[in-house]
View 1 (cartoon, rainbow, N blue to C red):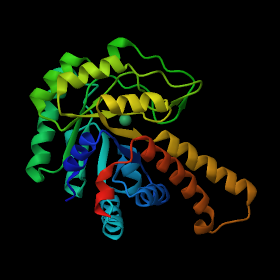
View 2: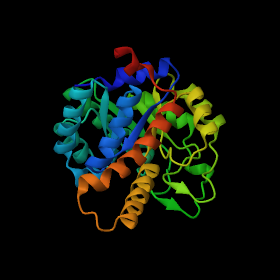
View 3: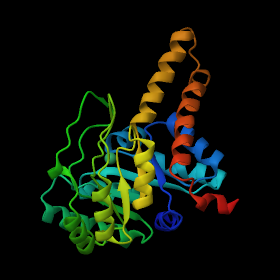
View 4: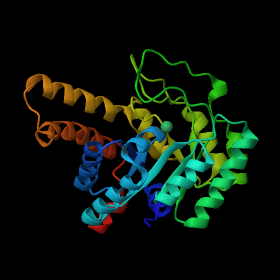
Length: 291
Ligand SMILES: [Zn+2]
């Protein structure tokens, strides 16, 4: 299995972040992997519970294996926002190389307890499986919002982060520092970078993850990487590009019915955004060394 932990360690050393791009079908997967191959960058493919229900757990594992062999680009497959231990088992047994257990809605002690069980199960199957935990209340879904209000009590607390990491031994921690899922019309909230720095001090070398990367200003993203974010999740911007390019194509050529003639425009729109993000995140050197 691919060593997801080493890839993030390399990113941490070179002060860049690896992008996680969520997919739910072949077209989006092709677009993201085209971008990774073009830039010779490692990449994380994410699937939420809904997305992997749609594409199939075993099916996405096999697809990625095939692309990885062909391209020689390190591709990590992460089970994004997994809310139960049962589902964690399913994805690990299907062959995922990374899991995100999201117990952020549970009471703190309960979140620690199940995250620990997830760690034990994952590492007993393969110690290279990357395990991500989450603390804080992350608002919004991966779509476009009119407005989102973030309260300070929803944000990750540095002292809790320290305890959580110590108790669970997780590889990476998803934090809430003003980020939300989705894109907010009129601009996403600014990140609380001072809080991020405090969390970084509290958790040491644990990888820090920024969810809701769509819509955050480039400046905030770059600052967050400097402070210690090593994985950034992008979903909504890809979905918006997908729907927009598809609608546009079909409005210009309503008679076209051949999928492989319809979808190249959609794929290149998503590929373009993915390439921009990979560059913004500092173009990880891990993949480049191989070539
Ligand atoms: Zn997320």
